[in-house]
Image (cartoon, rainbow, N blue to C red; front, side, top):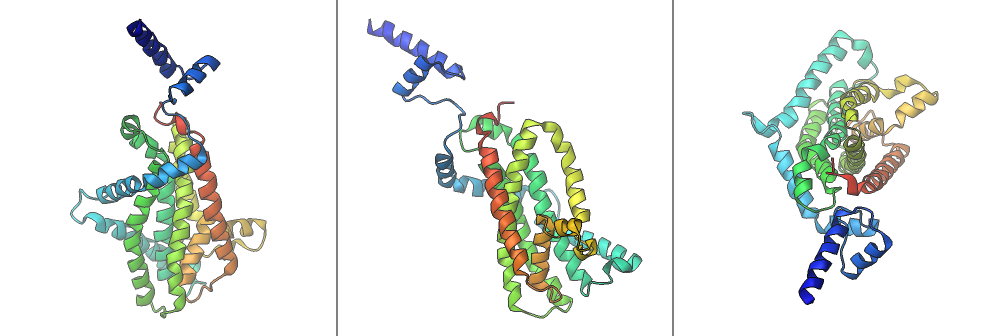
Length: 304
């Protein structure tokens, strides 16, 4: 009798595990035996606690991703610094020598350009990296049970680890081109922190969007290129004027973080409290909205 009941009980429980939408009686039975839906979405508070418990998993995953980049070449990780520097040399030749009117209102165009290229490369990397993060880690997602938000979080963290050596280069370029040592240079650290928080939110948003509509991944390079050419990487956003369009372009997040980096290292750009307020707003709002947006689709990741 006991064996018959055990077999029947196991049969009923197997049906419950396979059925996505449990009927009322099945849900009650699942609660009685402490069963939970595989791949379900936990409450937000519990989800945050799970992420904190597994934070070292995200750190190790990010370190592995950062190390793997450029590892097959002779110069290895140096390319993370050399690539934007080479682009800076190219754009400097174009906009300072061939088209000097573009840089006429900028005293230290070399430092201006290098800072813009390094920061925009870091921010745009979060958008493109987050977009492909779910697909690239599909095997990991299918094999292990963990909060899926750790995937875009580790992606943006890998971008940060790759970007950190560039800070020494930025400081060196600023000093080499004649910028004085000022206390404002210390503001480069909180600038990077706020930019990273913003980038994490961007990675979460792009990760969910592309995981649900894979065709959107094809648009990411165009979006990054548009942001590159409109955010004031090689010209001052003051050229947009004082109208509503100029105001929107001045306070859009990519332009804001470029301005913070330049005000920290270039004396021509004064520290602007309004810009810092906007930087804080974009970081908190984007990360908060992006994280919740990603969490709401937790049960769908890795299910094709």
